[in-house]
Length: 357
Image (cartoon, rainbow, N blue to C red; front, top):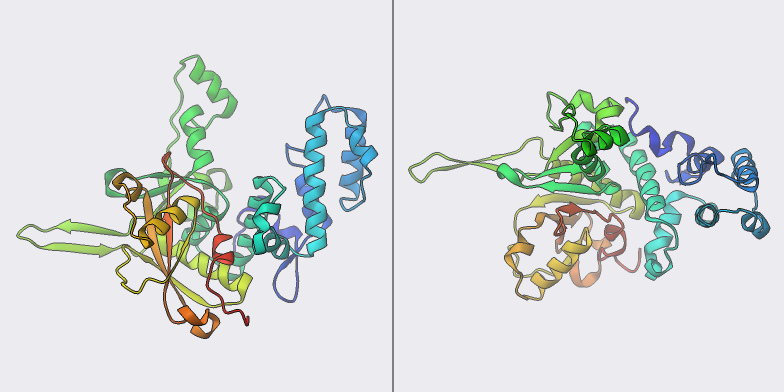
């Protein structure tokens, strides 16, 4: 399989017999090399010494005195957060165990590391899942949604998902970074960089790292053609990004919980016996709760719903007895700014699992 997501650090990790990922010194060095921790010209001698010592031995203990010696308060804060993350990760033993510990059994109140660190964990774990699955470009692009915010466009009858950071950068600087921002401020002409909807024709280009995040993923359910005379032809999209995302989420549940599920995109919930639902983001959690309780929902909120999904357990005995055999409905919703922030942890902590598992 071609290399993908080199920044995930997957190649520096070790797999346990269970298939979970064990952190290594090389993995921790990737964090030390990030802009948040890498020395800058203004770094004091104590900061340079600490960074050099940790780079040589990322697991070494760091005394409170070493942190207090850092002259820059932002640097002290950055190293404090990194060491908290590092120590928790090493104590847990695997990326998966640490990730679950952040959220399980009320763990949300104990999350004391930056969201960036959580996203990097998810990226490495998702890389591992898709490395085994030998996913194609559609699957890999859908996998990015688990750890990168998306900006959703609903114009022209299509629902398109674009990488939020990339879309905002292109809008602001034309993809030229600080230089593009300078040109924009000077009202100078800029070259145009375009984004593409991922298709069979351009899928091979996904592997070109420089342009990877410029691919839009089509999340449209179906294409409907009016043939006149009251005839309507509905074409199901063979390369639906929703189908690819559903496949990634199936792997995610299996990997963490050891439970086989099937997940399929759904256009509406038509179930008088609706018993359980899980929002894949904060917006859809609130929306599904309101729909389930039969509370009125404003049309503008309904329009933000990107998709519904139906999740079924392959073995109903692995579900809670009172809902065994019932489907679990999932929701995916953008916020008022058309941003979608998928929370894959919701699938791990909110499924109706049997207490005997």
